[in-house]
Figure (cartoon, rainbow, N blue to C red):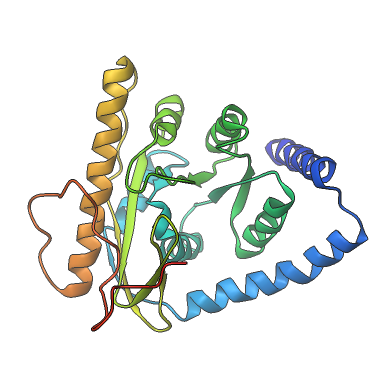
Amino acid sequence: MNDSRRRLRQNFYRQIARSEHGEGIGQRLLLWLAVPLATWLVRLSWRCVRITRVVGGGHLDEALARRPSCIPVYWHQHHVACIAWLLRRQRELPLRTGFLISPSRDGELGARVVQRLGGHPVRGSSTRTGALAMKELFQALMKEGVSPVINPDGPKGPRFRCKPGAILLAQMSGRELLPMAFHASRATLFHWDKFVLPWPFARVAIAVGEPWLVPRGGGEPAMAAAQAELERRLHATYLQARAALEGAQPPAAVPEQSPESVKRPPNSQGGTST
C-alpha cells in the first residue's frame, strides 16, 4: 500500500513537471541519454574518493536500532562524500536514504539518477512548495521507512546557518537527527556554500555525530535554541572529521563559524570559485 501511494505521488509530481515545461519526444530522449551518463559520472567520482576514516559510524546503527528511520543532516557543501557513505551503508543496514528533489523538469533528471544510485527521491521544493515538501518528507519518514537527508542551510544559504525545517521535521516525526560532516585532504570549492568537490584520489574522513532527539514544544525561543544547538553539533562533527584525517585531537571549544571542509593545498587559496 505504501509503495502504491508513493508511486501515485511520484506520478503526480511528474505531471506537474510536464504541465509546467512540457515533455515531448525530445525531452524524453534527453532524459534517456542524460540519466545513465549522469549516473556513471557520479559513480566515477565516488570511485575516485578514498574514504580512509569514519568516526562515529556506529551512531547510524544505533539510530536505526531504536526507530525505523532517522534524519541525516549535514551542511549543503558536504553532499559528495556523505551521500556516497550513506548509500554504501544501505547494503549493511535497513536504511533507505531519501533526497528531496524538485518536481520540476530538471528535478526529474535528478530523481531518476537518485533511483539508479539506490536512493529514494522525495519530490518537493523547500522554496516553492515548502508545506507540501514537509508533508512528503513526513510521510516518507513515518510510513515508508525512508531516512531523508536534510541540508539545514540549503538550498540558498546563508552558509552554516540552520533554517527551521530540519528541527520542525524532527519534532513532528519524533525521529532523531543524525549530524554528519566530512573533510578532504585536497578539494575544490564551488558556489555560495563552498561546495566541496574532493580531488581524484584525495583522502576523506567522515564523522557521524550522536543521534539527537529534538524536544517538542517551547515556541520561538525553543526553536531558536534548537537551531543553535544543531549548528553547534554540525560544527563539532566537522572538527571530528578534520581531526581524524589530520591525526589530531579535536579542540575542546567549537568555533562560532564553521571552518572550510578542506585542507588547503600548498600555494593555493583552497579552491576555485565558480
